[in-house]
Length: 453
Image 1 (spheres, one colour):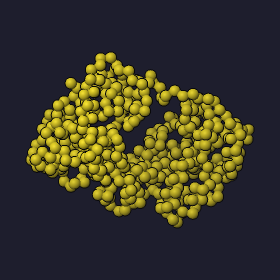
Image 2: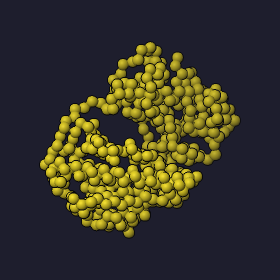
Image 3: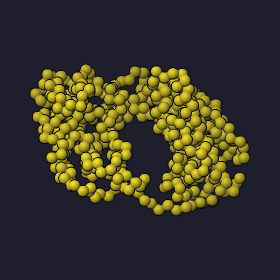
Image 4: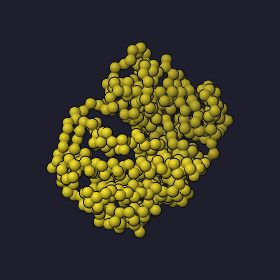
């Protein structure tokens, strides 16, 4: 019989073949699904929600020792136990937080960095409940501790308000027999010696991207689709007719920490810390550039950024952004937060036009765009031989995720030298500048194909 940990079981819940591949390893996995990972800051704060706790050893991989240590902590009457390990009938699991009620009665809590309860969480905690039952415990309550979406920070973090405890006892109790039946099915499935046949589909991405996607899809990036070349000059021309000069090109970079870092921010709220701005006075004008990047002192970057943005973009001018819903959203939030800049910010907001439209609506479409209107795919499709527009040539920061991670490191790591911070700033500025320069080049390409330059 296959020994099923929580991680293996959840692979099987998503797709039995994913579990089979992870055990038999006929091909090399790429990446990993992160069903059991929690953000360190979230976990550190959430496990203190019931006060003092005892943590099971983290300095050993001795499974039997961890199970025994957990049993002794419960037996000795410790009220809250973190990372307890349980086993029963070839099944095992680690539980984020266990509340010991005495007489082998417990409550179990799964800590998640999301702002709500997902179906996969219910499957996960149902498995934990089943394992603890086999191990001789009566689970009186099953719950998920997650971030409260509506929490807004004011001053010190309020842990009780930041986290929400969702009682899922009833839902997981109803899954008890399903867990048992699924385990039996997975054990049968795993007996297959040859790689099972299973078509790709939504289960390859939901709830996590499968690390064996390339094994099942023969290396395809996405399901095949028909891609037609298209150039709708009339629609592109109408789009260009909306623009006026001077013309501005704007891009923000943001961080979105799970734990709010600043007053008047929520979990995962997008906090702009940088912008790049190119502009020109006419269709044939010479592009100019201005930028802002917050300092590395850890202070809230939004006030100064709003001030600098208003200084950089005059009122009543046309501003282009690529997929402007994002930039518009950040500007609205800044306007709500800083009334002294609200009128100017909303003027920028109201005069913004989306450069994504010609590609999102497929007025300009080529097979080189690979079925996507993303800036990172449109740009190389339009300029395949221009190394100055190649994001892979940039150091350290090649996408928005890289920018967010680097800025967070820059403001959190107190051991960085001034020279290291200067280098980080150089990388961040180069990336954001390329975003708006790319927009300028794309706009020029639209002018070119319509014969305007």
